[in-house]
Amino acid sequence: EVKLLESGGGLVQPGGSLRLSCAASGFTFSTYAMSWVRQAPGKGLEWVSVITNSGDWTHYADSVKGRFTISRDNSKNMLSLQMNSLKAEDTAVYYCAKDASDYGHNCGWDCWGQGTLVTVSS
Amino acid sequence: IVLTQTPLSSPVTLGQPASISCRSSQSLVHSDGVTYLSWLHQRPGQPPRLLIYKISNRISGVPDRFSGSGAGTDFTLRISRVEAEDVGVYYCMQVMQYPLTFGGGTKVEIK
Image (cartoon, rainbow over all chains, first blue to last red; front, side, top):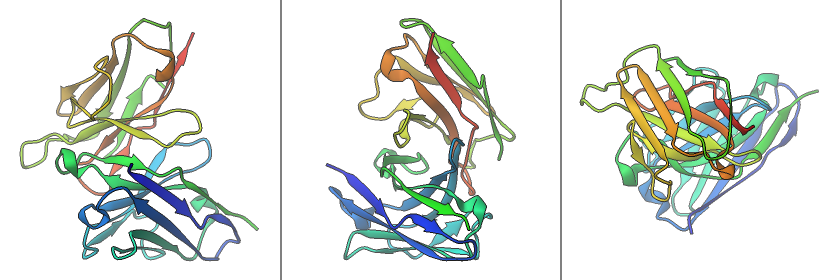
């Protein structure tokens, strides 16, 4: 069974840092691009970042560029998101998501974790 | 790319159809000729789930009462007969170019 399990969320002060992790299982992790998507409380979805299967290319939403860094360790089946200079508007549930490339490219994500809540507040 | 969904909320009777519209601020036809528009469903308290990709292709396991249609900038998700498990928020998303963007969501609830 394909599973994604996020961890690392919590309460952090504005300007602080947090590192999210996503443990993948049930599929060949190194084969798939991965993304982070977030959802502010009671709001819609916002794509945050993507990393290719090999980790050689990454891309970020303008709202997090220069502050967040996505990375992966294919030997450990782990995806990470380093978040620095956090702002109140970064408060959200952060989901890691597996690319649906089994259906072709540019389809979206066919597996999502349950999410981890990040709260930025003093 | 801005995606605008209507309606914001859709109260439906069980067994009746429902329809959600998604309009894009620009064409979602890629230079390769493919239109990269997907639909997702999010039940309360759950992560989103991919339903449909490339306008009209259902993900494995998605019931055939869900169908997608459209072209260019205008797209529609239809549920032929709404069941209780279909409640929640539906999002369209464009996967044509970064940054990937979502519509604001349409809440489907039972009357």
